[in-house]
Length: 351
Length: 241
Image 1 (cartoon, rainbow over the protein chains, first blue to last red):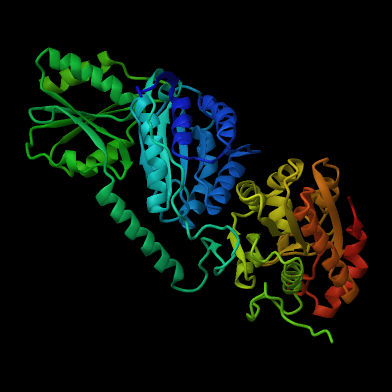
Image 2 (tube, rainbow over the protein chains, first blue to last red; image 1 turned 60 degrees about the horizontal axis):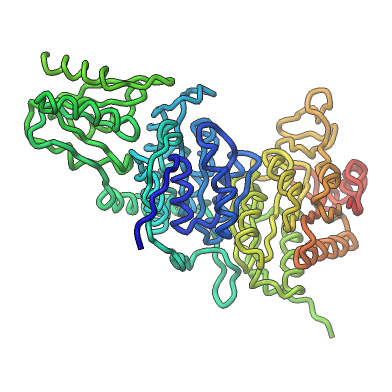
């Protein structure tokens, strides 16, 4: 059988990837620029015999995901920046109850109501836990519609494997852009066994899903357990793409849609014989450390973001002062183009 | 001969509740009804944030916590994923009628096939006796020092009456733990609320006027009198739908 290729937007590709991965519960609330995702789920998840609920709020939607996950379902919700701020309550509870879930943030401009243009200004919120308490979510940032489709499937597996919420961090460009996607042949018939799930206590002791530890010492013990899990994830789940690092004198660092524009600038500069490389983090937490361990002290990193420097902090931590780290960013709906990146690179070459 | 036994659905644990508190009675009624209906192995309970957050320390069946006010969103999802299970929430007045009003109204309006046990004690217990949405006019709390004043604080919220207006709702009844007869009546109401779910009839809620002697500043006997003489006037008992 030949592979099936379809033309689809990033939002729809995430939805289709979720259904392909066996997602059987979705709750969401409308917000631009991710409305294609909720509409796709309303139609296709219902056809796939999953549960679709349009919730009364983001707070309700994420708590529905909590309930569905507690009941053993593969559960997902999606939103955009202001809605994701509301969902932080539930995301912290998911982390505290060790419940797997997939949360999609198709970022738009902020702060406040901001605008509906693409942005990458929720990086801090996504990679530092986001809500209250000592926790992390695993964060994946697709750079194409195909990768959005593929990584959504991976997200469900990672969420179940490590029992934590996984966030897919995209932006308005990725969500709205249409590209051909090759559908995977993966078929999930049986979801992973979840002995902790709430199903009724027939033939076993009752299961309790909770994040409340009132007795002295219990919460600290639990938090250390979480930390152990996070350490394991740090060791095992770094994901990135690296281009032309071997001879590069300037290395661009960008993720998501911004990385596509950076890559395009890189190809132009390479065509002119300039020694430029690119690191594209795919997992934003854990942030990839490996590609930054370079010995040549003369290399310069140029971090390019649709924000005023958020991933920049993680690059500085990974580089740890060995090389210079420069920054170029626009936010609030401004999207850097190739020429702006090339101009900055030329400045760095001559400085 | 009939003997008075502890239900299988209730653990033999010592209580963390204050003397004269209504939660212990309500926990037992729920457990007893679950035993009577033979559904212990099918039940999934959702505990609130508030004094009853650790209800699962007393109940011998599957339970989940929920964020404050979100119990009915959590329960909605559990029931939709497992329609064959019996799912209920157990919530206080702050949880159900203040921070969770939105979740409450919309779960009821969707006609979710759920059972709700709503404990109305007119006060926030766990946090130390602050004014609740159901606090009576002139009732003194740590955040309404001179008593609840309609001009400043609004009126006691009659959420059960509001919910009774919704077409998705199947059954609503208000009962009170003010006497042995009141407790027996409450038990019947709780049973009906679970039976409705078993028969797929939709959203059922039992509001229980329940004593909180500690934050009413009364001894347990005087607290029961206060329900009878004051609270029942503001929150009349009976079937609302």
